[in-house]
Image (tube, rainbow, N blue to C red; front, top):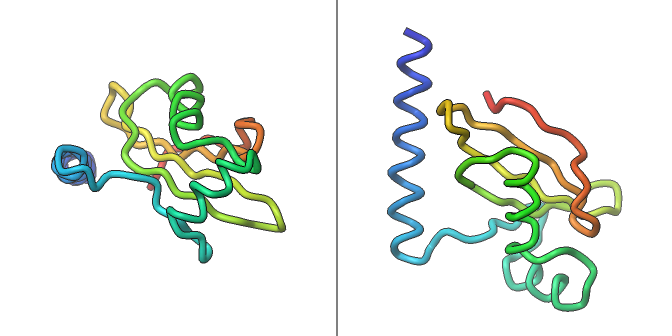
Length: 110
C-alpha cells in the first residue's frame, strides 16, 4: 500500500507541476525571507548562480524532471534545494551551494 501511495503522490505532483509550467507559474520558490525578485537580484550581482544554471547542474547530478527549486540562506550562505523526479518515479532532494553549484547533499525525499 505504501508503494501505491507514493506513486499517487508522485503522479499528483507531476500533474500539478505540468499545470504550473504550462501557465508559467513554475519558478524558483524563495525561502527564509528571500523573494524570487531578490533571488534574481542576487544572481544578477553574481552572488548566486541563476535558476537556469542551477537547474542544469542539478540535472547533471541526478537526471530527471525538476519539480521544485527553493533558495534559502543558512549559516550566512545561500543554497538551493532542488527536487527532482527520476525515471523510476522517485523524488530526490538535492542541496547545492548557490554560489558554486557544488553538490552538498542528495537524498530520497520522504
